[in-house]
Each structure stands twice: as structure tokens, then as C-alpha cells.
Amino acid sequence: MVDKKAKPFQERLGQALVEGGFLTPQQLEQARQIANIKGQRLTDVLQEQRLISREVLTTALSFHLKVPVINLRQIEIDPKVLELVPEEFAREHEVLPVALGPGGDLQLAMESPNDFELINTVSAMVRKTVRPMLPLDTKVGDMLDVVYKPTSQVAQQLGQTLKTITEAAPARALAGPVAVLEGVSDAPIVRAVEILTLQAVKSRASDIHVVPTADSAKVLYRIDGVLHTVHTIPLGIHQNMVSRIKVMANMDISERRRPQDGSFTLNFGEREVNFRVACVDTTYGEMMVIRVLDKGSIHFDIAELGLVESARQVYDRLIRYPLGMILVSGPTGSGKTTTLYATLNILADGKRNIMTIEDPVEYHFENVQQIDTNPAAGIDFGIGLRAIMRMDPDIILIGEIRDIETSRTAIQAANTGHLVLSSIHSNDSGSAVTRLLDLGVEPFAVSTGLVGVVAQRLVRKVCPDCKRLVAPTATEALAYEQEMKESADEFYSGQGCNTCSFTGYLGRIGVFEVLPVTEEIRSLIIQRATASVIKERAVKDGMITMRQDGMRKVKEGLTTLSEILRSVFTTD
Ligand SMILES: [Zn+2]
Image (cartoon, rainbow, N blue to C red):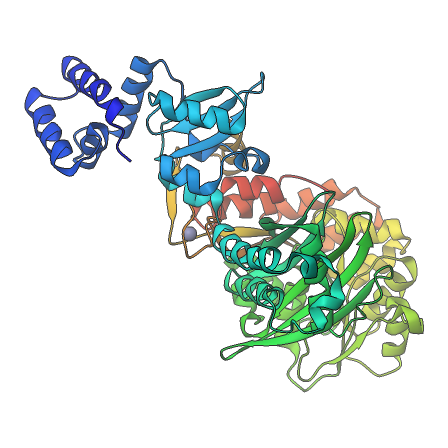
């Protein structure tokens, strides 16, 4: 939008740039003519014609207007601040709410910070003093796509649909779930749920959360492990939406207090997608979590996990042992199951009896006998494992080791001719070993039974379509230097685009350390050495740590520094 009042200022700025030696008078005149013909701002033309860089121009503007500059790509905007200015307004006027200052004033990034009329309008709208700021590193317009997405498309569609509900039949919409069932089977609420599920699949969401709060309900998508709010809905509609989903999932809609679960399947073209629904009553109403299981997108390939060549070789050797225990360790959501399943995929050749006890079975394999734990029937990991031991197995997978009984039986199985795969909740490779000892397993049994440990985390991959080189923060640069013994000025980071639903990330990759139990480590286990001593020994023998592996993936441009610092450098 061209602001006519801003023109005299643009003129003055042009003159100043000439006087400062940044432009020749001819260049200024040429840009002025283009600006007049096209009806554009002089500053925009100067940039488009590459007569002057954004940095120089912004710095000059900042100086003349006495307005501070801001690097928009390096800040995180509080959603509450974002909500102060509606997206449509922000787009029309090229403004972006950034933060609330100490005095409660609103810091607003603007393309024309000398547009006092606009400043007054925003100020009246948000009822706060507005402090204009100049974006140094990017245009406000480009940043809007990043901050108001990935949600705006869904929000828009949903908003439209929900508006028809409230406007056309406010009484009915608020009347409760019965109204949804009786007579309004093609009601907008059905359409709203359709939009929610379709958009979730399109944006690669793994879960949909419907969360009631005191005055509204939120709909969130988990994409690549991170939750994004996609819409806020009125509480009256929230209950109808929850009821509609319960009907689809064969759950009891009259029952609200008791936690329930169910599932439904939808076809999107050729793809069959399964939705697993769980709900629970909270103080503000029913909360729902819907897991999206897109069968078309699941495959387990060990080559795609993200193991570097040397670690992959060690792991390949470990899983070909005829007996012994291999543990995969990491916190919840670190991809342990995927690694175990990728391993089963290799081992399930139909020539050996492979049995699993899992909580729950997440994927069915050919040539593998899988058992679900079942608390109601009294089947836990320990009891399931003892049952498996009577079935003459060759290879056993135990979903998780977390108690003394299971860990003793598992180690015993490993010591008596079975290959045992399992997962354990621990921070790194060294502490997975000591965790077994802490549970109460005899050091000697561990030293002979355990053949190797994999520790891992999942990190988001940079979107290949919008990755750009950016400067790291001081903390990031320091962490990189410490692990890699070298420094770098720029690293890849996703700016957000359509491909990645404007998250800057697309898909995930594992960060690993693979510790083989060698003779030296065996004797350290018997001596009850600490986790760090065990890990140190492995590093001396050539193990790449998760931190090193993570930083290598940063260097290769696979992921970002902030992802590695968030997931690998923090302990739980
Ligand atoms: Zn992208």
C-alpha cells in the first residue's frame, strides 16, 4: 500500500542517501521515475532495482526517523501478542505486532514507521501506545506468512463454517450434542470436522488436540513433534464438535465423565487414514486427542533413520548376533519404536520365531507374533515376557523395560540364547547401562547379556524448499564450536513456505550414539563404573556422541542449531 503522506519523507531520505554517497543523483532520479510510474514507494523501488541493500536502507531510515530496528527472523512472537492485531489488518497495512514493552506498550514492526495515521489506528484498536520498529532482515509481508501460518488457511475455512453455525442457528448450535444428531447430519459441524481431519492429513499432523479452556476451546495440530494452534472455537460449538467426533469413533456421546477411546477411518482419495480418538473430562469440558495414523506414510527402513555410516556398521553387527540384549534408549517421543521396528523389519525373514510384547502394538508385521499388554486381563510386560519364553522364541522384542522383574527375565533370556530387543527410558548410552544396574539386575548378568546400546533423539529436518543461511546466536555458535572444534558464521534455517505448512521444517531424523559392549566396557560394568566413565570409554573407542552427531547434521544442513540444542543438549 502506498502512503501518500509518506512521500515528502521518502524524498528527504533519497536526498540523504545521495549525500551520504550510497546513491548517485542519476540513480535516485531513475528510481523516482519508476516509483511515479508504478505508484510504488521510492524505498521499495531502490531495493527492487538493487540500487541499495535492505540493511543500508533500513539503517538510514532508522537514523532519520529515530525508530529502532529489529531482526524479525530471530524473535519468537507470543501468540497472545499476535492476536492483538487481526491477520487481515496486518496484511493490508504491512504491520506485525512483535512484543509488549515493559510499560505495556506494543512494539509494532512496520514498513512505513512514519505513517502516523496508521500508528494511531493501531493504537486505538489495541488500546495501547504503539512503538514502531523497522524490520532489518526481512519484509514484514514475508514474515506474516511465517507467523500467521500454518494455521491461517484452516482457521479461515473453519471460521467460515463455524460462523454459519452460530449465525444460522445459534439456539441449535448451543443446544448440545443431541441437536447435531437429530436433523442436522449435513450440518456445518460435520463439515467442520471434515476440514479438521483433511487439513491434519494435508499438513502431516500426527495428532489433533481439541482443548477446552475457560472461555473457548483450542484446536491444535502436532506437526513434526511440535504443537501449533490452528483455531479457537466457542465453547458451545466445541461440545458439538466433540460429540460429532465421538459418533464417528463409535464412542458413547451421553457419557462425558468417564475417559473413553475409539477410532474411525477415512479415505482421502487412494489413502486410507485411521484416526484414534481418546477423550477425558477436564474442569473446562471434554479434551480430545486424535492420533492420525496415515498408513501410506509409514515404512520402516533402517537406512532412513539417520545413522551415520560408522554407527550403522556397528549397529548392523549388533543385530546379527544370535544372542544378547540390545537396548534403545531415549525419552518419550525420541523415535525408539521406529528404530526397533526398522530392526524387526530386517530380522523378520520367516526363518526364526520372532515374538513381541508391546504397549500397544503400533504396526503389524508379517512373520512376527505380536502381543498387546492388557492391564484389564493382567498382562503386563513381565507376564507377557514369561508367556513368550514358553513359546520357543528366537528373537524377542519387549516394548519397554521399566521394572526389576522384566529386566531380570529379559537379561536371562539374552544370556540363554535369545536375541532380545527393548527400550529403556534414559538420557544417553552410558546411563542406559547403569539404569539396568539401578533397577537391580546383577552386574555380571548385565555384563554378559548386554551387547549394545543405542541412544537417540528425534529432530526436525530443515525444509529443503525454504532453507536459507542465517547467522547463529552467540549461544548456538559457542555450542557448535565446542562440539566440532571449528566455527562457522552461517547455518541453514527454514523460513517457512507452503511445502512445510510454514513451519520451516519438513519431516524428522534421528540423532544417535551407538555403544557396543566391548571387553573393556564389560569389566567397567562389573566394577559398577558410573555412566560417564562407561561413555568416556566408548568415545575413546570411536563412538560418536549424540551431540557430535547432531552438530554434524547441522553442518550438513539437515537440521538447525536450535533443534539440536533443544533436543540433544537438554536432559530430562
Ligand atoms: Zn518450507
